[in-house]
Length: 298
Image 1 (spheres, rainbow, N blue to C red):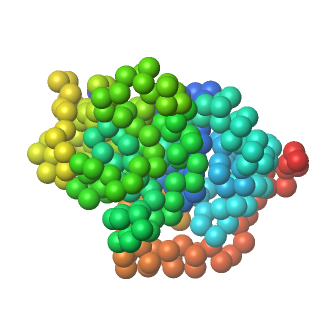
Image 2: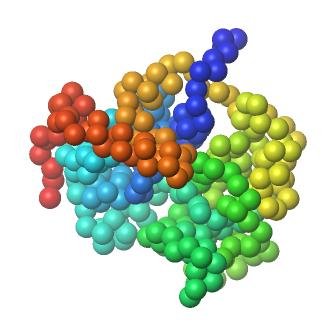
């Protein structure tokens, strides 16, 4: 029986949950400003999935190698190690439909069926908050069979009864697969969600709690969700990170703590950003970017 280990933070637990969803040999896709996902992918690579291929929206790059997370040098990390750089048309029309990479998205709002919103909070024409936008989410979630979700902060204002705008396609309550195909939707909907409170699936087309993180009660998860949750009959406790997984995250994958930014807000986030930028002022050695001079295919 594994000895209990409890010296970990919420961001590290989320990274570990993401890593455990990755299988060896897969292609994994990372969007912009998603360091929890990047750290999870690298952790998978260093533990149980040594043969994954990284694809990134940063520079439209495909990489076999990895390097420590960065903030001010993030483009160097991808473009300096790319096996190949692609145009947006090649990414959209050739790579994504062919490789079907596994990708984690972070909703600003999500309903019980996994439909989500990254465009606007409030009325579209007079919004309370204009969000960064959906990028390629509206396209990818229409055809990809490998959509996964994560929420650094599980809150009622995020898990809502009704979206203000739909930019990511979920399970579309009440529609059959035939009706979805008639609308050009070939994706079955998201498969999985991890938040700072637990792990979920969509076994019946609706969000279902399958494990609570250590110290979290079902009542807390429901209280922070605006719609009634399904609860798995075999509800479990999330297996916590191991000491080695935490060491890899802190010492090798993300010694700067970039992953923590997704879990912080307000003044705490501003201070963390300044600290990371200050620490990155000095040149990064080739030991952190071992393949930075490797020739890149056009």
